[in-house]
Amino acid sequence: MDAEALTEQEKNCLLQIARQALEEAVGQSKPAARVVQSPSARLQQSGASFVTLTINGSLRGCIGALEPYQSLIEDVREHAMAAALQDYRFPPVTPEELAGIQIEISCLTRPL
Image (cartoon, rainbow, N blue to C red; front, side, top):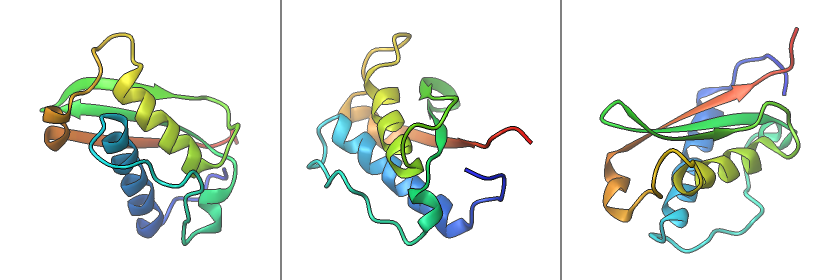
């Protein structure tokens, strides 16, 4: 992904994808189709991200990748699920925690 800033629409799209993935991870929604549609071609490009979950300002999970290996949309989706279920520092996120979880997405760019 290039260093150009994401638009508000793109940011909202990624946040929606992360929230949906989080809900799927803890069994609160049905799995979405693997191909996520985006209004932005940029989000379909290869990209790397970190997804951080917090509750009341305290870290609850964080997983990501330094190098891109899939589309940014799929990267965010995968890391949201992994942050909820696979961060070895924490037990898996529970359905009861969902309402209080804040999601932060960091999209990495190639070095300039």
